[in-house]
Length: 311
Image 1 (spheres, one colour):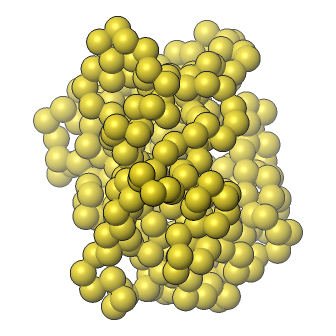
Image 2: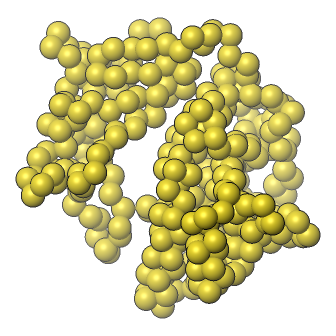
């Protein structure tokens, strides 16, 4: 984000706070960009906000051109955003809409995320700077450690589905689903590699993964879309003659759960996995960022937040 066209300036008083942008696109609107080589189904574009006397303007900040199609009419996404400004959620709980900044009541008295709720894992044998297990299922990756943990769960904690959804366009790095007598439980795990070789208190290690976690509200609001997404991802993986995305379960089991979730109660939880964060060294800014993420998830979609880090 920039102020007056100068990248990196930010908003006065916000210091290093990150921002999560949520552009609400209505029915009949399709955002698109030139897909990357190889047929990837990812769609993303970076934009710079410039604040001026006449409000905010949105300019592409590199990457492929992006457009939005409405009723057969193709419009540059920057022009569309000027008329339909996105909501920008800051890590401190404030919200920006166009050039108006809103602060929630009681913002200064927010309770930090409880340190004792951060699960401190032993990452021995894991290369904490290696995030994805990839199709080769690299045993020393952060994602692989999460999958092994989920597969080891027994009894009522065991999952019917453990799904590797890592790649562009993912719902999460790992999706775990189980049916209980009362509801369908869905856990979404977002993994992030460590910027450093050892755990510490680097704020940058949290910003991206907190943003990914906040985007999960869309799946709680449309659980059937999540199942369609997973079915599609597995179909594409098999079409490429690559290893299945299922670490536990199969298409038959997933389709059965899909039919159940249409009428069942559902319980969603999001987990941030960052071995680069030390629970002992996490400071006020880290805990405030996690609290802001949890507040957004709970108030928007009633989703629980879990945090997995290092000692």
